Image (cartoon, rainbow, N blue to C red; front, top):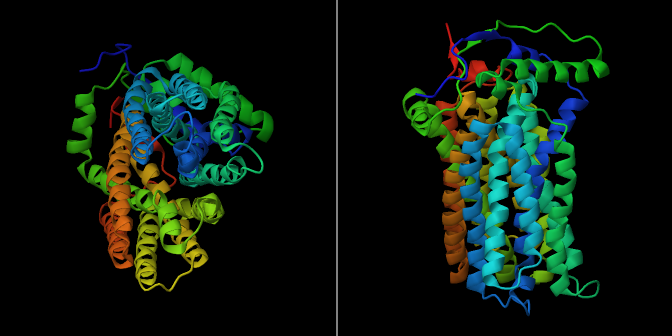
Amino acid sequence: MPQSVSPHSFSTDVPNRLDRLPWSRFHWLVVIALGITWVLDGLEVTLVGSLAGAIRESPHLRLTETQVGLTASAYLLGAVGGALLFGWLADRLGRKRLFTLTVLVYLLATIATAFSWDFWSFALFRFLTGAGIGGEYSAVNSAIQELIPARKRGTVDLAVNGTFWGGAAIGAASSLVLLDPAIIDPELGWRLAFGVGGALSISVLFLRRWIPESPRWLMTHGRRAEAEESVRGIEAWVAAEKGPLPTSQGSPITIDPRTHTTLGEVAATMIRQYPRRTVLGLVLMACQAFCYNAVFFTYALVLTRFYGIEAAHIGWYMLPFALGNLMGPLMLGHFFDSIGRRVMITGTYAIAGLLMACTGFAFAQGWLSAWEQTLAWTVIFFFASSAASAAYLTVGESFPLEMRAMGIALFYAFGTLAGGVAGPALFGWLIEGGQRTDIMWGYLLGAALMLIAAGTEWKLGFAAERRPLEEVARPLSQSGG
């Protein structure tokens, strides 16, 4: 059993006070300073895909195609390992310490990537970059959900997760400039590209200095005075802008503080207390990850192999694809708070699955040009992006506060491994075969998985919209009725 920080339980209204706050500049700071994580991840993934040719042809690195693929795997493994390690630490040491540490790891690693001198150094720095990004997912997602008022949690979480594609658009646009021999030497261009992420993360470090520790985390760890001080500081910040604050609603909760939650307790809570939510999280994360990674990581191959698009022009086709992904969560996010999670998650997964099946058939028949194919994916992933972002929202809301970061990390790791390995590998093999019909079956598999996820959400989904986190999943440290 975990050790208690204090032998005495106490009553607190910290969650109610946070949830009753009107939207303010403080909340915008949280969104911008913490949400930049997904921009950086989208930037990294897109840059490496766009820069693959230049990196392979680098006279200093001299990477083979196999080695280029291995460096992508190194990033993936780093992201999984970083999510698990830093997620575990975030639940023990706090959100603020970890979202500072993880962005620092990312900053140093991505800049170091620009100075790689051979395959092994490049792979190592990509691994460390992935570790920083993976750690960001767990520490930052939990902090955002704990600081944003319940009535806005779905809207904000979807929008923040969707900004991955803002980073993808930046990466695609950057590659068009940095890989143009008429503008810059490609050997220098691909190295400078990694500096884009480093420059962004320096500003992030400065902004995060102003983000307080999660009062909810302080509360459950028995640091009552610090939690009260943190909430009062936030309230003063908001009141200075918005005037007198509304009265908090709901009853206080009683906390039996603890220092940490063991991995055994995490497993028991997922398997025994919330088995339906565990199954739901696994299905949503794995299905969206397979479809996303299968299409996104191989789309450049489809364009070059079947449509004759030159590698240097791939960025023009990635831009609308990325923008469609970005606009989906931004435009649909508020419906997840108004209409509700279950209806919207089911609908976005189902629509994306049906449209993917139709597009796969049209591709096999040769009915689509390169731009029509891109338009089809843009529409499909307008809905799929909202579905994928909602998967992260779901796993964050599903479990008690004391294990939120670790829970997010576990599902992120599972989804990343399932989709990041199986999807691209299968589609790469199908594309190599050169038969449109074979690739159609791959698209139909992806469509079927999205429809399975939609059915699972309809069957196992639960109402979390506009409800306090402590009501959706009772804290392990909460005592009383």
